[in-house]
View 1 (cartoon, rainbow, N blue to C red):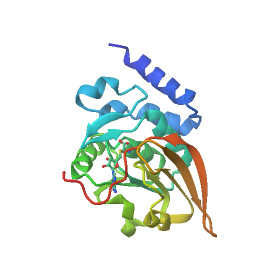
View 2: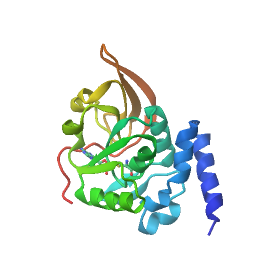
View 3: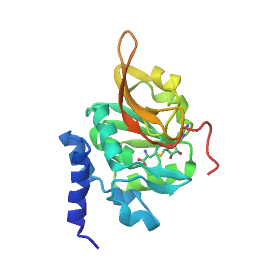
Length: 213
Ligand code: SAH
């Protein structure tokens, strides 16, 4: 068994070598233990830079991708953030340290319940987790300063674009298939939306409706 301090050092080194330079993001990724969000058989792989299965056929994203998305989101301490795709809750936990308030939604009730238990255990009181189809956003809490989507749609969902505040930023994977997707950054300006393509990525698809469990 490798020494935990060494595992953590390697973990942070992997993030830096993939282009994560933002000191606040690196600081939070050092504090939040990915091991808390990975269960069972895969727990010992928690500090590897790879996605891992979390149940309901879903995955916890690769840490370097979580870090790069968080960095691109440019979260500030006053921001109200929406995450679509709670999954394990890892990304939401990271955002909770950078933002004022985090709303996170997933279509699987079971994943929401499990993530809520971890948020309670870690005393992350500024996260609200909701079971819902996130392609419609969360109209009752809109507008959002930042929106992050951690499942891939063909195009940015219209309701999410509409729920982004002017001056706000949304980061999401888009693509026609499960294999070819790009991470894009959308900035809402007073005149409309500006799009920037960041890098190729691979996410599970954004699926309509609620899950069976
Ligand atoms: N951010 C997560 C990883 C998410 S995996 C983490 O840090 O662990 C993608 C998640 O998106 C899955 O949990 C899946 O259930 C969810 N998802 C897919 N389509 C959705 C939709 N329409 N609304 C809400 N959640 C959705």
